[in-house]
Image (cartoon, rainbow, N blue to C red):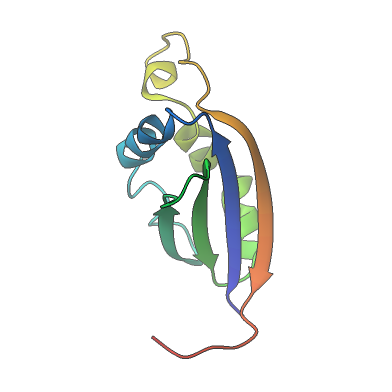
Amino acid sequence: MTVIKINAITVAADSGNELAKRFAARAGAVDGQAGFEGFELLQPTDDRTTWLVITRWADEDSFQSWVNSPAFSHGHRSEAERSDAPAPAHVGMSSELWSYEIAGGTAS
């Protein structure tokens, strides 16, 4: 059964574009992981400052395998860190990981 993982990342009001830029730099990094079904980065369209990173996985084991993989650690390091340079300042002020499974709806 598909599981949905939502990382709710709260950023400073002027940091959303930087968050989007950093995600764009990592685009496709998770695509080849077993059980990975899709990804979206959702930008708020109102005065909220919480962005949502939504991933879909075939099952919980697939998600956990990715989280515990070297690819996860590598992908969550900045370009600078991967080049042994100092890490840039964090964009997110806080984040929460939410877990869901599909309970109903329509097929797309």
